[in-house]
Length: 246
Length: 107
Figure 1: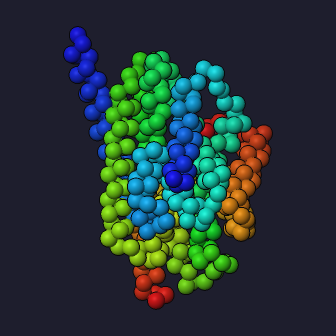
Figure 2: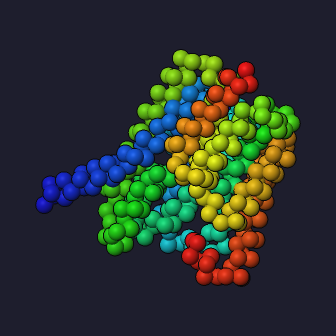
Figure 3: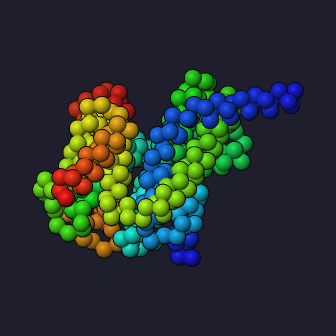
């Protein structure tokens, strides 16, 4: 009985890892770019790898590199990490019905692996099953494979960056800009998202000179506020449409 | 040592955000207004980061000219992404344009 159960767990784990392969391929260039950029920056190689091991959040890591190079204070790096990663709250709230019945040690563990990609893969899988009857191994398989993948590509990027130390000055950081555009554009599904993004962008530029990159945080706060005002206006006008858009 | 502390802080913040709902789920509930606010976080944060890098790549004033490789490649990326919705294609094409502009056109 115990053996078959374990075999089943292993199969679930494998299925989660297998379904994550396309995401692993997609994350590869970002991992390499992160490692390459970091290798040419002010941080020690071990520190760069330690960030991938401990933080495991691509966009927050990219941004931290830029902030550290710009001599931002600890408080700004942490506040930015908080804001940039807040979207994970939405992911965990969406997945919560599928993990709520698991023992606490599982819920503590799975939270650590909840990236954009792991969320996308796990949610697509769990959605087909009734909440409360899902095991943790599929999620774990997806998360562990994504984690190992991120570490490997960080190492490769570090090696690449130390072999070609001039890459930073050649404008490799444009790769980050391109990556972010690829994330932003598909999210501009309604005018209120465009308005929020444009507001945040314009203000971030205008307030670029504020100390410790505080202008960035202020710009985000105002951009979110604009988005919320427009959401409330849309809701008053046409509540059902907004519900559908969500 | 300082960098180590900085990263440990980032890791704790990230982990707390990811696992809070899983661990304290019963006691946390999100009113619709918070959910609405959160839905605007990714686009605003990412846009706020890239706009200064695009318009003022050298940290000074705005460089609104065709010699600004960042600006040219960003316009290409926006068009490719809006038309195809393919992330890898967007990144590949705009990076190619960026390096072409940087190393051939402007230089």
